[in-house]
Length: 228
Image (cartoon, rainbow, N blue to C red; front, side, top):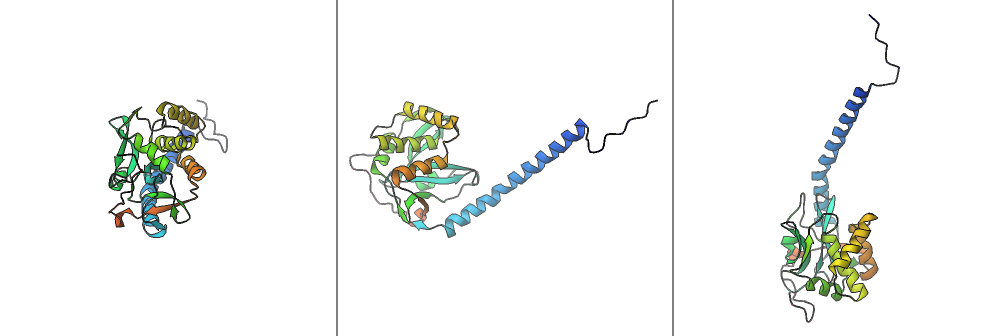
């Protein structure tokens, strides 16, 4: 019987390599998952006790909140006009529906979600554009087609309102889908992209926490001529 040849020093068999890769993947997955509650707690503490707060957004302010324990975000537009003061794109049974909601609803869903809402600001002052709010309000109740986490989501709607106001045009879903598709192809459509547009169009270089829970009596500051 032939003696089994010793393995060359420093070399693993293919099965050994596979086992090591699986172990490494398992450790990475555990560490990644373990970060969720930690990041959620940090975001809650940061939002509630550290970040500067504002009483009320400006009409047309861009809003966002952490979603997925800080690994994703949800965005909307402040439109004023009472309790249902936020325009957002919702996934409603697989369809992308534009709805007017309360801050409670805006912050209600998502793994690791908190009650913290960030507002586009310049320094400590909220900034927005009534024309952005008008575009958002004009789309209330509209169905923008099949919801898609990548191509037809909340960021697309907010980005579309900013771009439509900048161009002096009405919100055009088909145009926004084309623009969004191009951005996602280049991996640009994200919260960072929205912040860039907000800085460009609203001069928003800071993001402050809306102290909405202390200001439940929301001012009736709806855009003139537009009803919800």
